[in-house]
Image 1: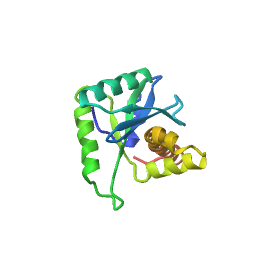
Image 2 (image 1 turned 180 degrees about the vertical axis):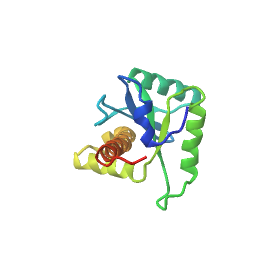
Image 3 (image 1 turned 90 degrees about the horizontal axis):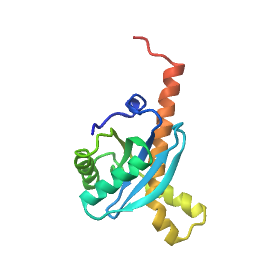
Image 4 (image 1 turned 120 degrees about the vertical axis):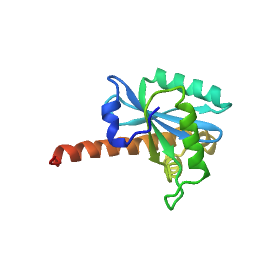
Length: 165
């Protein structure tokens, strides 16, 4: 598994596949997937965590079923932009997971993604119980949507303002 930059995704995306977004929690892994046009992120059911080997196998199966060839994973940075213990745990998960899965990964700043996802669900008048069940996948969708929007911006900028070589 290679860690790549967001600008490299389009060249690494296999035909007829989508991009997955992940929000790693201590108890669950939130999952979202893009559409084939890479415009929209849709939350999928969360994966309840048990042991790493079981989590990795279940995640790989979910990604295969969704036809994902690239993964965007939320990197929980501190508010000042530094990396703390949760960022280190995320990097360790990716390092270990990458031993069994060759899909490229992009780390994406996930600061406030859970807060934004929860506000959206509160605005939609979801009960506390339903919010708790869906928060990690909603955060994964928020993370993935941010990356998709950035990719679209990079593509538009490259098209409108070509760089002289």
